[in-house]
Every structure is written in C-alpha cells, then in structure tokens.
Amino acid sequence: MSETGGEPEATARLQKLFEGHRLTPTQRRIAHCMVRRSADAPFLSSVELAELAGVSQPSVTRFAVALGFDGYPALRRHLRDVVPAAEPPAEDSYNEYQQAVQAEIDNLRHLASLLADPAPVARAGRLLAASRPLPVLGLRAATAQAAGFAYFARKVHPDVRLLDEGGTLLVDRIDAAVRAGASALLCFALPRHPREVVDALEYARGAGLTVVTVADSTFAPVARHSDVLLPAAVGTGLAFDTACAPMLLGRVLLEAMCDALPDAQARLEEFDARAAARGLFVE
Image (cartoon, rainbow, N blue to C red; front, side):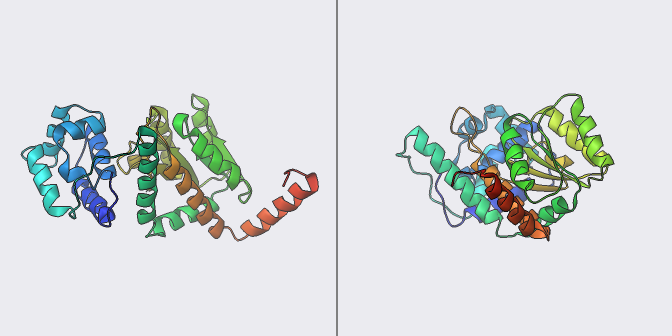
C-alpha cells in the first residue's frame, strides 16, 4: 500500500461514511479493510476488495447497498469524488516478508496520525490511573499485549490484575475487582475476537466499570461495549496477524497512565534501587 500525505484525511472520510449505519459483522469487516487500505480503496474492484476482506463478492455488493448506494460501482465513484486523490497502487517489488514489514510501517504511520489528537489517550490514562485495582483483560491473540502492559504497569500502579484466562472464572475475577474498588477495566482485543471477550466487556460495564479498549479497528465487535476505544490496526500479510501498532499503543497508554500517577517516578526509582540491590539485571 502506498503512503500518501492525504491518507489520514482519506481514512477520516471513510470512517465518516460508515458512521450511523447498522452494519453486519461481515460488513464491518469490509469497512475495516477499506479503512486500512484507504489510499487504495477508490481503485479496488469488488472482487479485489472481497479477496482482501476475506468475504464473498456479493457481500461487497450488499455492503454498498447498506450504505445507500445502488451497488459497488456507485460506491467506488463516490469514493473517487470524496477521498483525496492518490495514485493507483504500483506493483510492489518487495517479497512477501518485506511486504509484511511495509504493511506494519503503514500501520504505525496511521497510528501516528491518530495520535495527533492526544485527548482520547490522555483520558484513558486518567481512567486507568484512578482505578484501584486495575484489571487488564486479553485473551488468545491479545494475551501477549495484555501481559506486556500489566508487567510494566505494575511498576507504577499499586494493584494491576491480569485477566488472561477465559472460562467460568473470568466473570468471578471481574466481580472480585469490582468488590475491591475497581472503577475501570483495560481490554486488548485482537482478531479473531473471542466471543467471551465481548461477553466479558458487556458484563464489566453492567457491573459499573468504565471499559477502555485497544482494538484493531473502530468496527471491532468490542466497540459497542467500550467507553473509550483506541484503534491500532494489525498486519494481515502473513499466516498469523502481526500486532506492532497495538503493542506500541499499549506503551503510549502506559505513558499516559504514568502522567496521571503523581508517584509514578518515585515508584520507578524505588524499583530500580531494589533491582540494583538484588543484582536483578546483568547490565
């Protein structure tokens, strides 16, 4: 995918086009694909878009109709009128591994453009800093993201509880956090989205928790159960998705949480002193 100066604007206009429409999960998948390929979207055929999104060609046609167009050609003409002009994607000379890296670079650039408005991340940081304890949820593909966040967050936050196992005990652990005084829950949600994550977020909100979610898209199934949703796209060019952007967004969120914790620096210095006394690291 080519990177152009107009791509953030193209992404914003695409997202605005989809707002206010009740889309099926398949249609949300198509919308998410178009947002990720915002520079290319006006040039894709219905067959190409279907292949990229992993859906059928008739699903693309129904998607266009759901947006109020006569069919996909009318939607594509509309995109060419409203999305900033970009050159059609050139044939890529990279091999498949390089293409995967380039796609992640594009995802990181897109994340950088979203962070031009720091207000959502700053708000999320304040919510997480204020929650005692702070439950952090991540299942299956998102387990590593949740565990990484929890590992570092424990250095500055007094009570972080990692929820990385599903099953019947998950709701029990959410209840325990609520009883202990939690006010917010952080969730990392990556495709394919486990049903029990969606159910857990619905339960958490019903229990009074404010849900902050790092997800691969604003169209992810967890969106309707999140109070603050922070999107970061995943790479799909390899057999298994890559998640550099969600990982980096998690670190940005950690920074925002530290900014909202007045004793964060003192806690870090205390940890460093204990680590040095124990000879914990070899540096």
